[in-house]
Length: 421
Image (cartoon, rainbow, N blue to C red):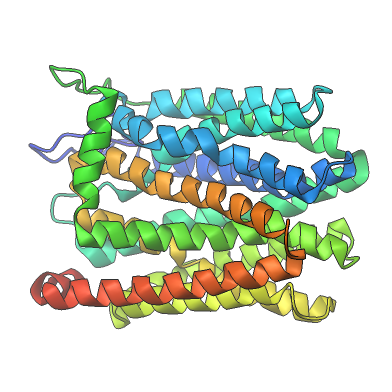
């Protein structure tokens, strides 16, 4: 099935356990921590950077949205390429692309440079993330039970949460001391570290299909996959969770900055949320064993949506903001392993790269739709009003996703019961 940090997927026989399984696990953990530290240190800086350079809220939203435009279009083909080429090529190429985008940020190109850098960085981060989640969701044995799989996903997400906890405080802290350029330089350096780690991955050459898979066919295959109701619902859950996360990382700095909260405190709040997500990961397998999937989804989406929107409406008291950050982080900490588990339950192993690309399309679509919505709404409403409208939409989506999953489970009770054992 999967070699250590697999470069190939075979559906006809299970793979032998890798000799260096422990070192491969450590390498995957370091890759995850480094990737998310780099990703989350940069995202909260872009909006304030555009504003500090004399830009408007609409221009800040444009810069934030440019991060997701190309990835939304390319996620599915990149997922298909992961199935064909293996993860190593995508890891190295993605890290190098991230570094190029960081270098563009260091150039005095104004708003156009920021927009271009975010487009390039978006493609690079997508390539790395598709590779990492493909590794995480592939079964380690032919008869691996779902509960063991869920525990493994929780452990994998635990390492990712460590990077998410480090990144915001690192980025805003360095910007506070050395300016935005220092943070951009550090981001570029971490991206180059990702390239080195990707080169250190030892993989076998992938088994290539006899006939290359055209790019357009990957979209057709993804469309067929989306016709499975459980897959479509999984994508909706992932989309909603990423909107919540993007509000926290990209728009909390804006609304809190308007309320007079210092930038270093904003970074600390983001790290508190990420740390709470880190703490929540070990509880994921327990929740999945004791609660229905639909119940878990409903709790995660509703609690995280309410807590992320409430920040815009409560007094900017440190203890209150810290409490909301902790609640939001704990609830949203379940989202990543939850959607990975749902994806693993409803997609075949030999198409897991394509499924990862499809999930990433939903995620990047969220990072495109969220700034677009805030950009449009802030043209007619204050930023706080935009928070209220987006929050209402999140609650509606959360309820519909919960209902759809429950309906799917009722339509197929036996498989759902078997998956719990």
